[in-house]
Amino acid sequence: MSSQRRAYDVIVVGVGGMGSAACYHLARRGLRTLGLERFDIPHSMGSSHGVTRIIRLAYYEHPSYVPLLLRAFALWDDLARESGRHLLEVTGTIDASGADEIVFTGALEACERFALDHEVITSAELTARYPGYRLPSGHMALFQPRGGFLLPERCINAHVAGALAAGAEIRARERVLAWEPAGDGVRVTTERGVYEAGRLILAAGAWMGSLVPELAALAQPERQVLGWFAPLEPALFTPRRFPVFNLMVPEGRYYGFPQYDVPGFKIGLYHHREELVDPDDFQREADVADEALLRAATARYFPSANGPTMALRTCMFTNTPDEHFILDHLPGYPQVIVASPCSGHGFKFASVIGEILADLAQRGETEQDIGFLRLSRFAEQPLPAG
Image: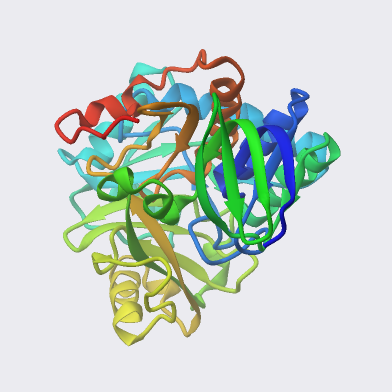
């Protein structure tokens, strides 16, 4: 290890979806910013890859996510214009479940509460309009026209390129070994050097527990698998004819996409096989059991997509007990900010979370409502201070 020491205003550990956005916003505010990433930029080892990621406004998970999403959309549009990259494909979104189940009722509540454009349609009406869908006859669907999917690798590249252009220093393939307080700032030790800064942002996803052991019980990595199947009727699964979906059925909650880049309809099952894992030691190759879970739902609810397998890829969710994010200062360390884990639904928020993290690092507060994402909600599992 070198004895190199360099001072920064903010160090960001993890340059994935959230970390890259934080670096971008910090650097554009003129703060001396260092981003440290143990893998490539972008990479496929964590939670910020997979070609496409859903972005939706009809958010049933919690009403306070909707204002964050409205800001996220604006920031994604700004980033696309500035970078000259196409980052977001608008397809509309389908949130479907039984008429009294949370996916439909929660999406409807979000639309009504925030006056979002939407349309309520039956399963039969959904199939008539979008023939790729064959949902149970009793299901109800909410169509919201603004949503679609982001291109995560492009988004990360755009944020990193913007951060570099604004003066940030980004270092890939440099693993963080430890961090510690240094006066009212921090000292970070990596495989290659020692760095000091006034503030530290930890956005390490599935590796959060190794960097902050106090958070290990609140940030549990889970193996996730995505499948791409070649449609038997490809014309039904183009972005113009197949909105992204969030679907609750007896088998679980599925999500999926039209064909884009990879030649196949894409589908995933939330909490796939419920496998909690060590992010440095788990089965990264998908197997026949993984494929069977995804193909069974494809055959039943999207039969025209049930062709040959084009790809199976693993990623990770990092789940909190209530499946909401964590955005907060670390108790006992006011100079340290923890970001995520996002419990499998966070990438769409990366643009606004990056802005919030820059606010917290620069001013200690943000105008966005993140009270429901604070660590204090886990008061029954108190974190040791200092």
